[in-house]
Image (cartoon, rainbow, N blue to C red; front, side, top):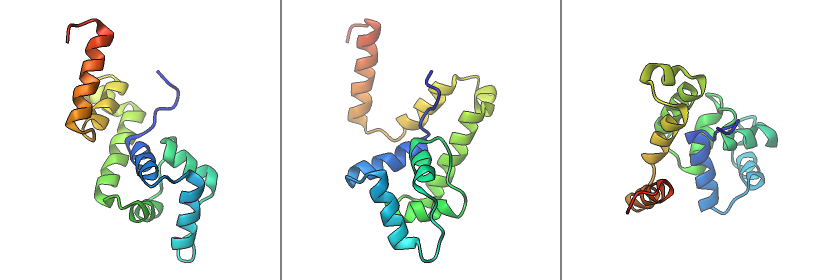
Length: 131
């Protein structure tokens, strides 16, 4: 298991940045230009850690990130709660499911049906199950 697993919120932010063909530096610059006069934007290292899922945006930063990337704030808050539960191990204890499986289930909800079919076929192939 990797030491740092990208959270679903981090994965969503990264996906939105890729759609816009933006780097973290571009994202930070846009945040500073659009919101820097009314809100203290954290530095590059913090924004990078949020994108990687290594940390979570605070309650004041989350709405700013969501507005900038057109992500629903309510959904983002839900993602943060799920991510925190998964990473703390509390959800694993309650559900009895492996940490990676819980994260995969959350990612699965965001994947199109075509991609789900491809992932399922790939898993079968890896296991040697006839497709």
